[in-house]
Image 1 (cartoon, rainbow, N blue to C red):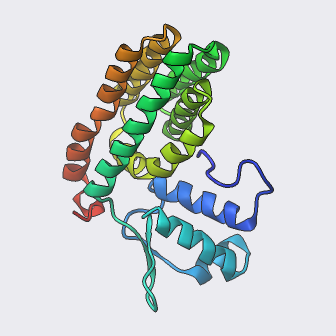
Image 2: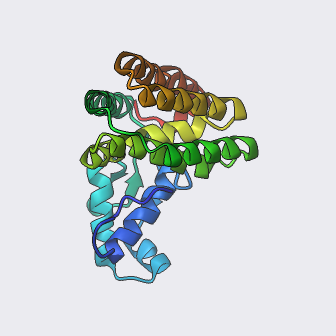
Image 3: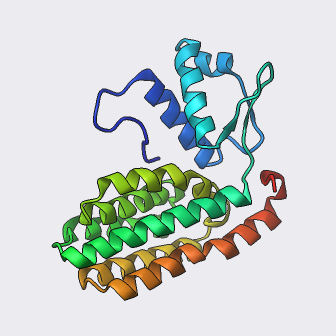
Amino acid sequence: MYALGNEFGRRTTVDEVFDRLHADIVTLKLEPGTRMSEVEIAGQFNVSRQPVREAFIRLSNMKLLEIRPQRATLVRKISQSHIMNSRFIRTAVEIEVIRRICASKPDVDSVSFDENLKRQKQCVESMNIDEFHDLDYAFHHLICRAGDAEFAFDTIAGNKAHLDRLCMIQLSSQAALSEVREDHTEIYHLLKKHDEAGTIKLIRHHLGRLDQTFNAARESHSDYFED
């Protein structure tokens, strides 16, 4: 799973605990509603409670954990409002990055995009869902790099976890994964042509698939949702 810890400095114990818990929550290895204990997590990682507490706070700030004083911490259930807010922010950020790319017309890193899409295809064929989601992160990171907007990816990554949990429920078929990869491929080709209107239209369509995904996931896993 794509690491969200400190990429540019020395990684700390807090980063390690946070990244592991974040990955387990996003991939639903820790299901919504799961009870979590600082003591138990500290024992699993063989660390003191302090880095676990700090990791819990970071996850709580991302609305992935519910810290309850004097009671067990819970993995938060999926919230429709959080999903829609995250999509709004991500759509706005990605559209501005696309406009930046198309205005400056930089050379797109074809080698990295081609390799990413090739590996996505392999993941679809082998049904490697975890790696596919990592490559999804990396693909959108490449878009931000193309726009010289690394800072924008921090915002995307920070808001993507809620969307990812939803996708882990529904994007579990070869057809669903293939559909996402096809969107990515077309986005890449439009970006290479610096087709601003076409790329923005497709990004809106790509992220608009969330409505159908949400309804299907809520129907099949109603106990995962809080509203």
